[in-house]
Length: 185
Length: 272
Image (cartoon, rainbow over all chains, first blue to last red; front, side):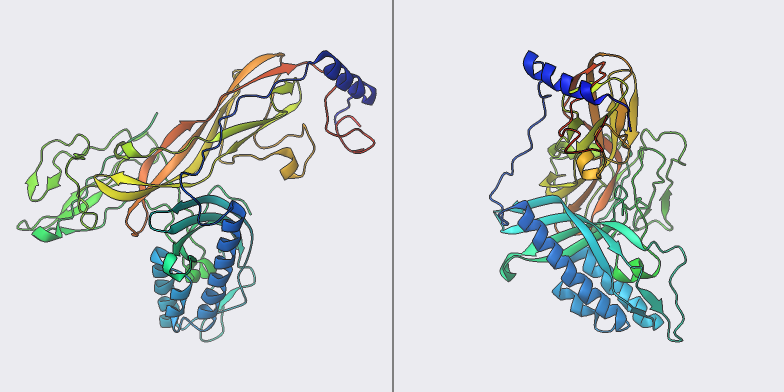
């Protein structure tokens, strides 16, 4: 704690107000305005939709892995593009190796990083950051032995991208998921 | 200064040319559930200098492959890797100097890898520099600077084709106007959102040692990825530095500071 006399605080406030010597605001670049009408009315709405979509994705993804990677096409209901491809490939490996997971993935702290919509094709693209926790997840082989790497990070900041499908009432699908080097958990 | 790296990738399946994937550094790649839960996913980051680049091209009618070695070992800055004879079709087009954007490429059949120079239709939106206190500082106490910037996706024409480019902030360079500067991977945050007291030190705060008026500049380095259609993202080597707004603020000697609550309301505030 810095030692600044309390009496002086009052004096300064009074002096500043009386003299009109209150610093002016620094010039700040105005925020860019969206160029088209958002599909989601507000950023909060977009973030809420993305968070909900990611929760649905995690639930399906966890279940597929708990089931040993069988029927990974269940992920098509929640993922698309390169994310779907990465998951299908990974769970195919799980199935081949006869490994499965136990425990569930959790996440928190989702924040909106990018929200773009295109009124021309009715699609929305959302990117969020979040912190994912796999500390309760174990991956076991057919003998029941854990194959989790000793250096697997339990809490990781991710950048998650979503694409919407207008024909499905704008439902959001996870389209990419990458570790976010600038993020902290 | 931007370090630009050129790599030419030839992909002409129509003429029977077979292409191996160029060894571009991938910024992470999509992280699947199996990987994230078993081993963890790699943390990808494109560095501006010192990335290994190369390409393997198989030319029909010629046995073997031509391996174009990469440069950059993570030490000396990579200024530019020029490949002397880029192949377009089955003909050498002579020394390469940028892309010919008048001849659109087939996105499923890209003729050349994209470089920062090709992003003429794209530009990251500038970030916003904030400071606390807003517009002034107290000599000897921490002034908190923080940036507002996020990943951005833009659609437009890239090499004559509709494409998306994604810019992601990588680093923040502050020049405080008093001769000091700092580079941070973190963009910082307001005191209140960090749950700390006003004038507390933060990873992005700075202490001015003398009264005066200072001009503070922030430049944010962005990395860029591109994709054609709904394909996967491909990183572009190098970074783009974009200046944010300039702040001008006055530092004064003060035995007193203005706080938002008095000591009765906030007994743990500065000076209480």
